[in-house]
Length: 332
Ligand SMILES: NC(=O)c1ccc[n+]([C@@H]2O[C@H](COP(=O)([O-])OP(=O)(O)OC[C@H]3O[C@@H](n4cnc5c(N)ncnc54)[C@H](OP(=O)(O)O)[C@@H]3O)[C@@H](O)[C@H]2O)c1
Image (tube, rainbow, N blue to C red; front, side, top):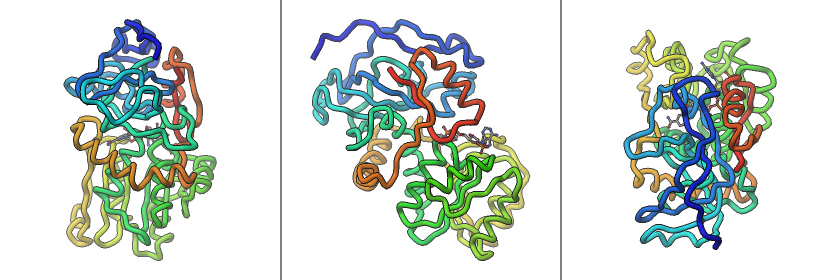
């Protein structure tokens, strides 16, 4: 292995603000602690939470790097004490609470996974954040079963494109909402049985029509706002609604009697502040149940665009334009 440099290029957030506050900086190469590996990053996925962090509204949890970036793929450059799972030079992808937009990043070995066979490092760098999020919210919290109906809002997002493919692969009937005909087409191409252009169609009526009037069994929602009441209406008896974000706001007026009358469950979660052990448990299930699907080509990260690390601001501009379908990735 070549000797490690002392310093690296990373993207810092100069001050909360627009995309231009993302600037390349020289930082010390991080040192892997017990159980951790240092990864020479080849690709770092961008996620909407990075945009909220850049604007100053989503600070890293205590102990996490202030460098943005929740996921990456690359090769193992060094191993900390007791880190034995991966060999030096092995290709891995990792989930972190910060630090991905950099030439080197550390991750606990239990929160890293081998790059699925057949995936490039760029594709693998677009996997962890959405796959961990979808697995924990759709399959663990939401308990999606084969034969059930599943509705994901924001179907063309990084999260949505992952949720459509995994729900379909596990035998659900999949409905997705998206904001244009082109995005709806992309959702159908990924396996959605019904794609609803929410700008021209009422998603509640469309979801009822697609389920023979009974409503959907599970809804994954990132929109919130007035969708809260409308999700209660679109849900089937004993339906589950899992909240992962509130793009249209966390406050709403809703008719809660439907919770009672339909025996609904409304829950939610965030991934980033969860412990290494909790993330390791999600990683283990993904490795067992989802990695074989990735390796068989039955699901695949949808990389819409790549940008060199130094052009992180440009990549954030694209994300905020919401014209992308799938993932945006920084290459190192
Ligand atoms: N809870 C968790 O653990 C967790 C983890 C990761 C991500 N998330 C959340 O999941 C969401 C998706 O993340 P991502 O990285 O996949 O995002 P993304 O690729 O940027 O996609 C977001 C999409 O949501 C749609 N959208 C609907 N209402 C919107 C609004 N008011 N503002 C902006 N976009 C809106 C847009 O498509 P249309 O054209 O269809 O409107 C947009 O393309 C984000 O809100 C993120 O914070 C939560």
